Each structure stands twice: as structure tokens, then as C-alpha cells.
Image (tube, rainbow, N blue to C red; front, side, top):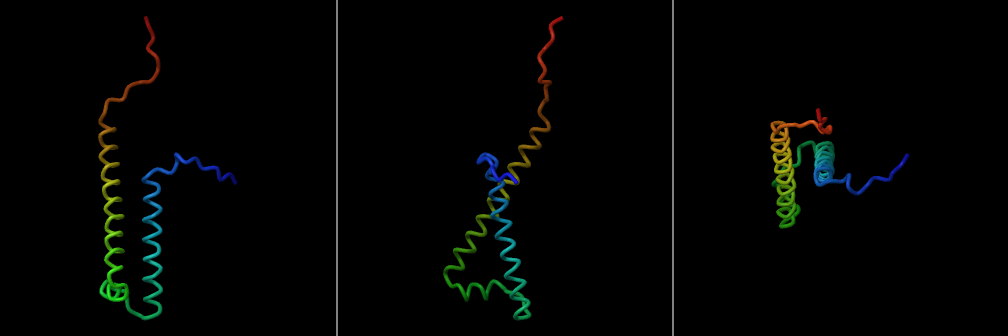
Length: 97
């Protein structure tokens, strides 16, 4: 197996996808553990009481990450819609008659 991945293949979207996937997966695992251990879901009030002011930093960070994903997805969608409506030309050289 070859692990020579060029640096150019890791774009912003790819990196953002993996960060948010990891964040979402970690949240899902913590929630599953909490429900399995205590029988009720972990709620925001409990997190804010446990972490104190650091919980607000975590909440702001999560809001920023999801906002970046939303903006990135919206931007990519608009760019693809515009690219579909642009005139496509043939890349072959013109033949003189």
C-alpha cells in the first residue's frame, strides 16, 4: 500500500470534513456512553455546569466549525450551479478549411 499522499490533495473542504466528522463521532460516542451508564441523555445544562466557562469556549468553537461547513457547502453549491450554466467549449484545435 502506497501512503504517498500529495499535500495538494488535502484541500480546505477535505480537512473540514474530517474535523467535523471526528467531532460528530466523538459527541455521538460520549452520548452513547452517558445513556448506557446513567440511563438518560447528556443535556447542555449538565455540560455547562460541569465545565463552567470552558463550556462556552467549546460551544463557540462548535458553532464556528458548523458555520464554516455551512458557508463552504453553500459556496461550493453556488460555484457548481454557475459552472453548469456557463457555455462549454470544445478544447480541440480548430481545423482550417
